[in-house]
Length: 381
Image (cartoon, rainbow, N blue to C red):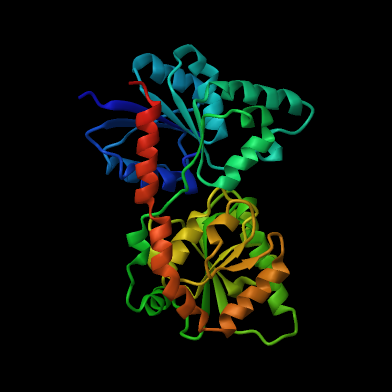
C-alpha cells in the first residue's frame, strides 16, 4: 500500500510547536505515512533536526531570499515537485503562506492553531486589509484543529464567518510523553543543587520556556522584587530560568537593575527538561496566554507543585488539578503563591498523589491516535 505523503509547514519551529511535532509524530505509523517538514531555520534548528531525523522525518529548510521570509514560495516549490495527500500547517501564518498557493493545488489542508491572533500582527493603518487577506488565505483550510477548546473558540470569535461553519472544526487536546515525566529521579533535588552549586536550604523555583512577553517572565521579576522589598521575612530561594528567546537580554538587564541577581540563575535551553524540573521545589507559569499549557501537563505529571495563571489555554489544563491558580498580569498574587509553596512543604505530597491522574489525562498517545484518525479521514484517498 502506498504511504500517505504529509507536508508539515512550520513558520516558527520553536518551543511548544517543536515539542508538539516531537511528541505527536513519534506515534504515527511509519509504514503508513511519509512525512516531510518544511520549516524556516530558527535558533532551535539543531534540536528540530535531532528530534525529527530520529523519527525518520525529512526536513526541508525554507531559506530566506534576499533576507525576506518567502515561505509561500517554498510551499509552492514543494507542491510542484511532489504529490502530497495532506498539508499540516502549524499556526496561522504557516497556514497563511500555504493558502497563498494551495488554492492552485487544492491539497487537503489541516491548520493546527497554536496561538492567539495577537494585535501586533493585525494592527495599524492596514489592519482591516491585513485581516481580510488572512481570512481569504484561510478559506482553503479543510479542518481547523485546536490543541485546546479555548484557542479554537478564540479563533471562532475573531472570524465569526468561519465560526458558522458546521464542519471542519475539531479539538484534539495536546499531550506529552507522560512516562518521561512520571518516572521518578531519585534525589533529583540534591543532584540539581550539586550540579549548580546551590546550598541545600535554597528553595528552587523553575521557569521553563521562551523569554517572551507571552510567558510572563517579567511578572516573576516583579514578584521577586515585591517579596524582597515587602519588609516581610522571606526564605532563601532562587529562580532557575531555563530557556532562550528574544527578550532574554532585556530580562537579565531588568534583574540586574533591580539588584536581584542573587535570586536568579539562567541556563540555556535544553531538549530534556525532565531531570531539572524534578529537582525544583515548584514551577512557575505566569503566562499571559497559552494555546495549551504543555509545561503545566509536564509539571503535574511529574508531581511538582505548579503555580499557574488563569489565562486562556492554561485555565483548562489546570482545571480540577491541585495547581495553585493566580490571576494573570498579577505579580502580587504570584509573590503570595510563591511564599505559600515555600512555607507549606506538605503541598508536595498533594501534587505527588495526583500525578498518576495527570499522566492518564495528558498522555500524548491518545492525542496522536486522534490526529492519525483525522489525517486518515481528511487526506486524499
